[in-house]
Length: 253
Image 1 (tube, rainbow, N blue to C red):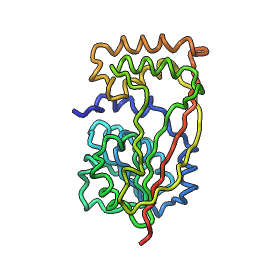
Image 2: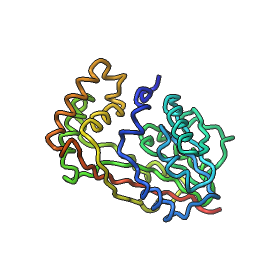
Image 3: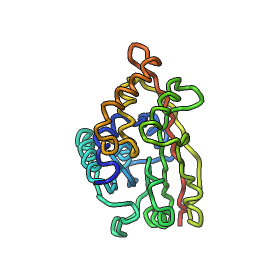
Image 4: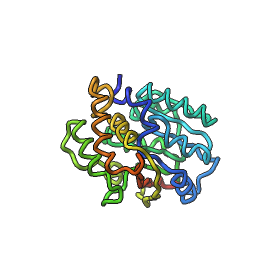
C-alpha cells in the first residue's frame, strides 16, 4: 500500500480546488484544443486530467497508487470523459506510451526522481508541446484569516515543525534539457467551506493520512474543527485559492 492509498477517497473533495476559470485561462493562453493530447503524471484522483478534458483530445492519467486510479476512473465515468489510466511511476513509463502535446504535473513533482524527470519529459513532450506544473494553494499574507491556526494544527498532527511548503523549481528540474521556461499562469478564486472540511483536508496529507493517524483520526478531526470554529461565520469559512501553472515549452524541431 502506497503512502496515499488511504487518502484517495478524500483527496478530490478536500484539497484546495482548481477552479473552472483556471482551466479556461490556461487553455486560452496556450491555445489548446481537441487536436492536442494530454498526459497527467501523478494524476491522483484525476483533478488536472479531468479539468482539461473538455478542452483537449486524448487524455491519459498516470499514478503508482491503484486506489487513486480507482477514484480517478470513477470521477471520469461521472463526468462522461474517456480517461485512459496507467498504473506506474512516471519515471517507469515505457517508450511505447508515445508523445503528448501537453504534460501536466500537479502536486507530484517533488515526489519524482529529479535525476530522471528531465529526460522523461524530453521524450514525452512532442515538438512545440508544453509541460504544465500546477498547484492550487490557500492564499497567504492574511487573506485567509484562519490559515495560521490551521497550519499550526496541521503541523501538530503531522508531527512536523516545517512552516513552508516545498515547491520544486521547474527551471532547475529542466536544466540541461531542450525546454524553455515560459510564463506562470495564475488565477485566483474563492469558495466557501466548513471547519470540518478543513479538518478532513489534513487526512489528505501523507504525514497525517488515516493510515498514519490510525485511532487518532477522530481526535484530530475534533481538535482541528474546534480550533477553526472561532473563525467561522454560521459554520462557514471563505477560502481564497490561487491556482498556478508554471509553463515550460519544447522547441519546434
